[in-house]
Image 1 (cartoon, rainbow, N blue to C red):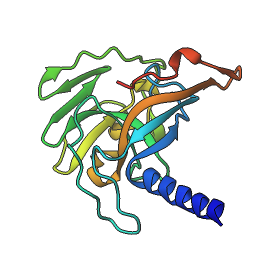
Image 2: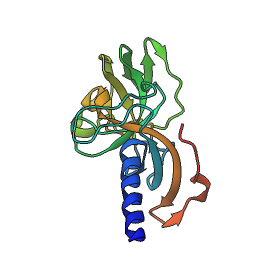
Image 3: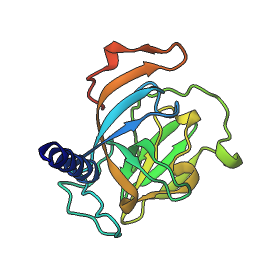
Amino acid sequence: MKTGETLVTSLILALLAKQFLIQAFRIPSGSMEDTLLVGDFLFVNKVLYGPEIPFTKARLPGLRQPRAGDIIVFRPPHVDKDFIKRCVAVAGDTIVYANNVLFVNGERIDEPYKHLKTNPMGPAGYHRDYRGVVPRGHIFMMGDNRNNSSDSRFWGPLPLNRIKGKALTIYMSVDLGKWRVRFSRIGSIIR
């Protein structure tokens, strides 16, 4: 009887923690290389921006709003799966992305990210350059591997209510091509 109660209590606590505190996430694509690699497993902080309340469209209050530079897990408006990208601008910011250079509010942003592929056309044939203002209640998301990323340049600024949480740390990393653990990445803080 006690073992059954302990199992049920443990399961309920784990489900509550996953819904409101922290969640595991796996990197499925190269859109965030070299910051995050395919096969990285990470924890996501759901408290920071306010977790969703199950079966509603409401959220609990967060500790702060997303900021430029935050790496965020979210569900984009056009597909029913989680993405991870870097927030490069917030509501009210003016974005210009042209010739692989990002300008926010007229200031060139120094970015050490890679442009691995030189294909100037992205998903669905849209051009990768972008100009616009981030509307209220939205943020602008881009992959660090800019030429291999489906991001806000293609589907627009991200509504804040689509955010799952902020990436925290890598708890496991496996090179899937060679099936070996990348021990040097385990425990890395995500920036």
